[in-house]
Amino acid sequence: MINRVRLELPELQAGSVWLVGAGPGDPGLLSVLALHALECADAIVCDALVDRRILALARPDAAVEDAGKRGGRPSPRQPDITARLIALARDGKRVLRLKGGDPCVFGRGGEEALALAKAGIPFRIVPGITAAIGGLAYAGIPLTYRGINSAVTLITGHNSEGAIPGEDGGAPDWNALAKGSPVIVLYMALNHLDDIAARLIAAGRGPGEPVAIVSKATTDAQRVVVTSLARAAADAAGVEGPAIIVVGEVARLHDALGWYGKR
Image 1 (cartoon, rainbow, N blue to C red):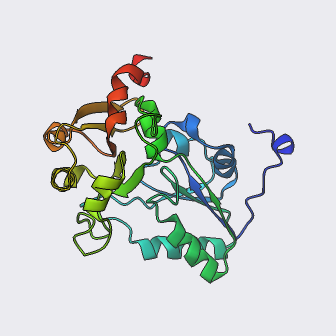
Image 2 (image 1 turned 60 degrees about the horizontal axis):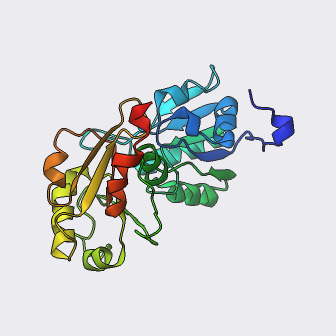
C-alpha cells in the first residue's frame, strides 16, 4: 500500500474525473498517482490497451467499464465515452478514465478534458509513460542518442477515419518530415506501413535505413523485428499489434542494448 501521508497524495474526490495514463503495459511502469487512483476510484472506464494486471490493482468493488476502441470491430464512439464520464461524475462517483500509454499522446485525453471542463466537471490529468519512451526503452532503443539524432518526431499511423494521415490534405507533410526528422516514431501504423515507407523513400529516406517494429512492448509477449525501410512492411507480416515503429539509425542499437528479452 502507498504511504499517502508521507507522499501527501491528492484526493480523488467524488464527482470528479482523473484522466490517467497506465503506461505501455508493464504494471511496474505505473506512476504512484495512477496506482493511487486505482485504489480509490468507484468507477473505472478503461481502454482496450490497458494491461489486465493493472486492472487487478483496482479496488475489488470498483465498477470497471470497457471503452476500448478496436480497429475494424464495433467499438464505443468517443462522444458516448465522454458522455459516460460526465454522467458518472454527476452521479457522485470518483471516476478514473484509464488509458494505455499517456492520455494526451494520441490518446484523445485533451478532447475528454475539454468536454469535462465545458460540463463543469473537476478533473486531473495524470501523465503516463508513452510507448515511444517506454516501449523503445524495453526494446533497447534510445529515443535519442548523441551523434545520431537531436530531434525526434512522433506521428500517428492513421487519421480519425482509419486512413493514412495526410490523405485528407492535412498534416503531416511527408517530404518535410522525411528531410527534417532523423528519427520518426510511428504509432498505430502496421496497417499502413507499406504506404508510409514508400512515401518516406520517395521523399528521400534511404531504402536501407534501419527500422524497428516493437510488438506488445513491455509485456511478456514483446517481440522486436529489426529490418529496413524497404522491407519493413514485408517483415511486419504476422506481427501483432499494438506495435510501435521507429525509423532511424537508433533502431540499430537494439542488437547491443536489447536487454528485456535476455532476462
